[in-house]
Structure formats: C-alpha cells, structure tokens
Amino acid sequence: MKLDKISTVFASICMVGLSVYFLNSGNLTDLTSNNFSIAVHRVNSGYGYTISEGAHLLIKQDFIPAIQNEIPFPNYDIARSSARLVVKKITRGQQPALTLEELQEIGLDLNRNETGITSGLPIQSLCP
Picture (cartoon, rainbow, N blue to C red):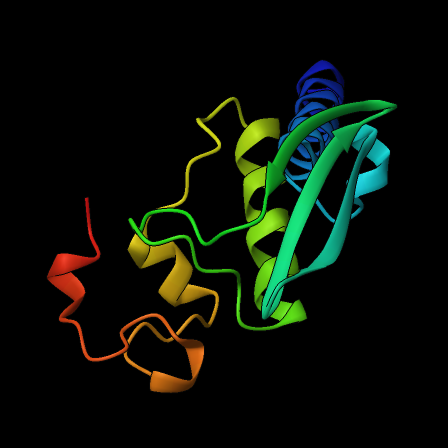
C-alpha cells in the first residue's frame, strides 16, 4: 500500500515536470533569449525590418513579402509583428516565409488604399 502511494506521488511529480517543460519549450516570450534581435527601420514611405542572430544578419526585409510589388510595411507595428512572426517560425524550425493570410492576421489590411498596396489593382494581380 505504501509503495503504491509512493509510486503515485512520483508519477505525478514526473508528469507535472514534463508538462511544465513542454509548455515552456514552445513559448517565445523573449526574443533575446534565443539570441535573435529585431530592428525596424524606415524605408522610403514605410518600414522594413532586419533579423539578426548575435552579430550575424539573417534577414533584411524592406518590402512586404508574399506580394509581387516592392511596397514597404505601412507602419512600425506591422513591420515589427511580421519580424516577430518570422523569428517564431525560425525557432520552431519552419521556413521564415510569411503568407498573405499571416500578414492579414497580424493586422495588414491589403484592401486599404492608404497602405499603397492595392492602388486600384485587384489583390489577385498582386499575388504570385
């Protein structure tokens, strides 16, 4: 009886420990903890970003990806959110490419004229 109780307590402790480990392993709350840094910069009439790992430049993105036209991000926040999503993908071992859907999820409105993206063109003509 006492051995069963000890086994149950030990198994519970192991399960809690494993749960905490796996929950934290996918969490990307601090980009600097993975030695990645993001810098948002001005580009012509908008913004771009760079992603570095330590002193090594990995990505310099001056234009919105996933569209054919070379149009910068419309504001600082969209550029930063895009860069953070790319870092998250890199740390998960995924390709660092962003889709139109992901860009819309972080707040890029492809239908707004003030972004300069559509400028009277249908979105289909902007997609590869």
